[in-house]
Image (cartoon, rainbow, N blue to C red):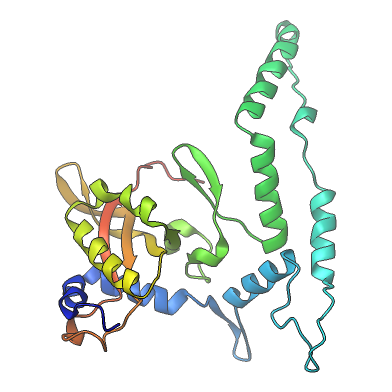
Length: 273
């Protein structure tokens, strides 16, 4: 860290905003997914997700025995989930159209052809299988829509209150690992905050770290709606600056591990049931 100018470290860190402090609390409180079932029973959802990921990739958390011999992978949960996945396959070509209207029956073959073409064009079958696989392996699935396309979210990148079922009520934060090129694509959107990204890149280059971490926190806060601000649901993007800590800064009282890049109101106004 000797090659890093101390001024560069300090310029990234500004007086933490209220949203930054709340986000830091959100991450700290919910990242492990701790759930207390009873006074004598609790568990960490994060640990369960990590175990499931190891199973689906045929890996042990500790791959060797104490004597150095490699363990042979065998997982009963994986065998069960794989059997469930194979026996619940839904083939889109088997979709059947029916009509109670006698006059419309002649249209069914035409509509069936149009439906098959639509599902094939949008790779509906592949996406359905991807969602189904995640649901069987992990027990639940989170899907997000980006540019009119559905994407399964990696649960290892998700932080949310484990005791609140509805994401709309509890909020959610997703960690995104981004390359420098992906960061550059957001330069215009991040406007005046882009300087903070460039300052962090100097620090990262000095320690040969290439991947940036940006959090997208969907929560209720003050967002600009039209020409005014109001309390509503939206997204706040934070730059992860935890590559170094407050001990490096000359002004640790002004240090914040997450720097706000942008915020925008949710584009959806109709509640998803």
